Length: 278
Image (cartoon, rainbow, N blue to C red; front, top):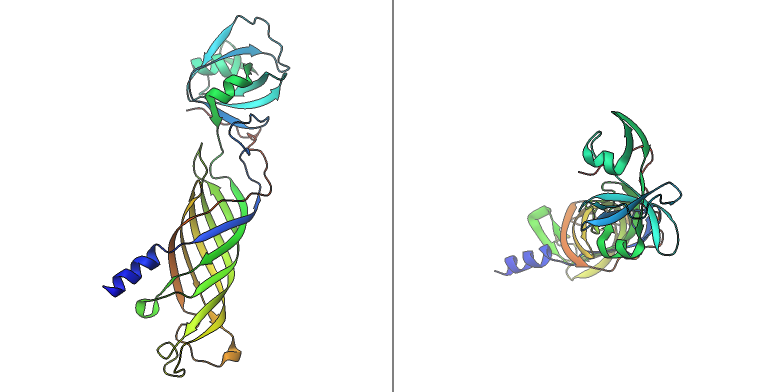
């Protein structure tokens, strides 16, 4: 029973990873702020008015309804109340492509179509559309409080704290869900006792070890689920035959933290790689 409780504590130990540097982010700071150079998706049918690339409208009475779930790129701002957008591509020669993407002469595709839409409509009827699986660099601090040792399947509370650096991928179109792969190098407080030193020590004592590690972390908004593995190394100056020297451990954790971003860039639609509505 005692071992079962210890296992559950290890399984649900708090694993906190607080990024302090996040480079090349692809999302806006605020979903309610409409930003030039970002992509969005209509959550309901929305009236738009065709215009030229400068926002000039030939006939203000000719409005058309953009389909629900259609994604678009905010190209420019006309004035304080409206912006110019263009839609992600639908399949060539489809009715939606002819209506929203390009002018056609017979089957020949012509110029891209642009539309004006009010900022108020966008705030009420659009949400940010992010580019998934774009690789960004992330760094932070990992706190790993409980470990499971592979050797004899032992559990202990050897505490590791240290910086991590790695890559991050967005895995959702509209929400802040990410997958992180990180390398870490931390300092660990390890408890040595008679059992872990083959009787060399008679009383428990704490020592510091260095700990390289690797982790995979899923972020769902601010909730984190992660798996870390690594190895602890006591200094050779300790001159102690420690059972776990250089042996692998793992830690599974659930955590909650507020992510701190220090720099962002826009999720601009690449010009050489059109995005498609489906």
